[in-house]
Amino acid sequence: MIKRTIYCSLLLLFLMFASILLISRVQAANLEINTPAITSIKQSMQSRHAQLVEHYDSGAVGLTMDGMITMRDANAVPLAKRQSVNSLVSAENQDRNALYREIARANNHPEWESQIRSTFGQRWINMARPGWWYQTNHNSWAQK
Amino acid sequence: MKKNLFYANLLVAFVMFLSACVTINIYFPAAAAEKAADKIIEEVWQLENEKKEKKSD
Image (tube, rainbow over all chains, first blue to last red; front, side, top):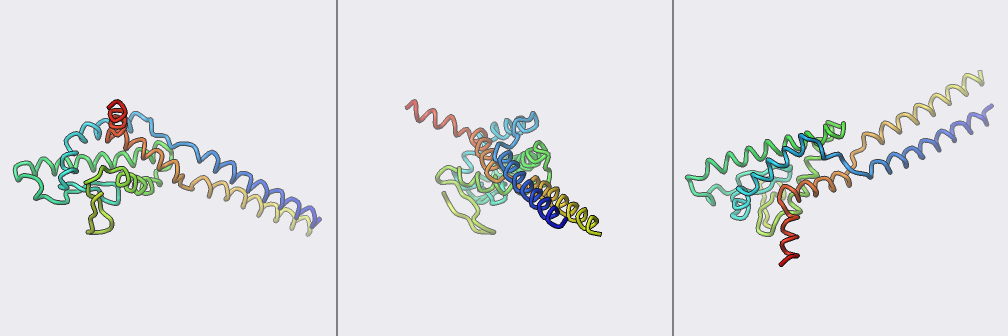
């Protein structure tokens, strides 16, 4: 009887590992990023980028570690344009927040939002053009 | 008595099996997320176009 119990437990243990392997295989696939909501956020960010790019280049706007952007050096922008750059930055951050939330939701894991945010934070910085500024940790900036 | 022990063991093993499934299922797929992020960033920053322009130069 005890032998049978052991065999049964071993079998279930084996099944457990088999399922771990199987599920991790499935997970190695892709995240869902082709929903209408994500596409529309992407398009809005894409058209805004044309206006933002000069401010990344000038160093006025920098990339933060948490996947956002921020006004880094307001003096790099003429006083008259400062307000419009500020609103560009806040609109961009709103879109970025929505993007991370939508990706998490599209994959049926709303709790992944913060991990998606930090993944994006690293990747934005990684793919930034030479000359753009990014945050290394709190209150510390570096240039690509 | 022994039979009860057997079922208890079976139950424990089964619960372990189920919890393993749940644990693995909520694990964050970091590599897939990076891939997805790169794809979106390329589109938003239009890095694809740049590459094509460079190639056509």
